[in-house]
Image 1: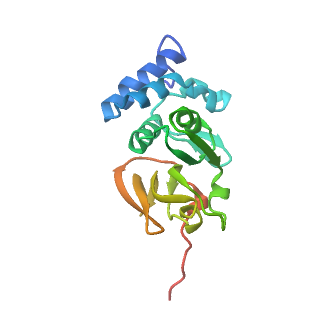
Image 2 (image 1 turned 90 degrees about the horizontal axis):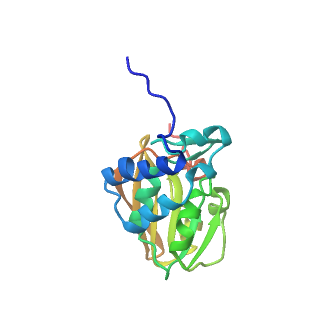
Image 3 (image 1 turned 60 degrees about the horizontal axis):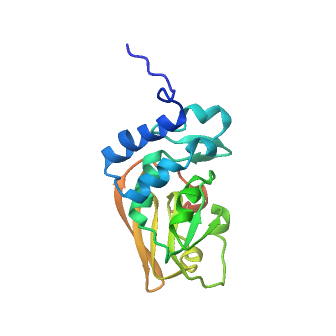
Length: 202
């Protein structure tokens, strides 16, 4: 029997961060230079509870408490690569509870507004002009109130929950609605605020 301990490679967190880039991101097709640069610079261990700092770079989600999770590194790498952020973007981020994705994204866009999941699903009459939306978690439905905050043609990257499975998804806003296309099956923490309403049938 082989026993695997949850501990970062010798050399500390900097070495663990580099190992994440090589063994998790690059081997899974995440090779965009800006993604590797940001994830190689931002200390992921600063966004987890103190007791989880030693496993901050493991290939799995980390429990933040209160029903929130920091997604595995590959999830954020794939999201950033699919989003293709530019300095011309006015970005909106629905934060999954850690603040890590916001730290990665902020220098890559012209401006960034961060909202909690509960605020993201709240009805609003305000029309928005965001050109890029990232949702740090998996959703079951995309609320009209969130689509209303986006400019026409805005890009969207998020997790999508369907039939008990989560997938990375991307899409655009067109004709007032957001259409999402599933891209890859991957474990993504679910955001309960975006659960679909259950309908009773007889």
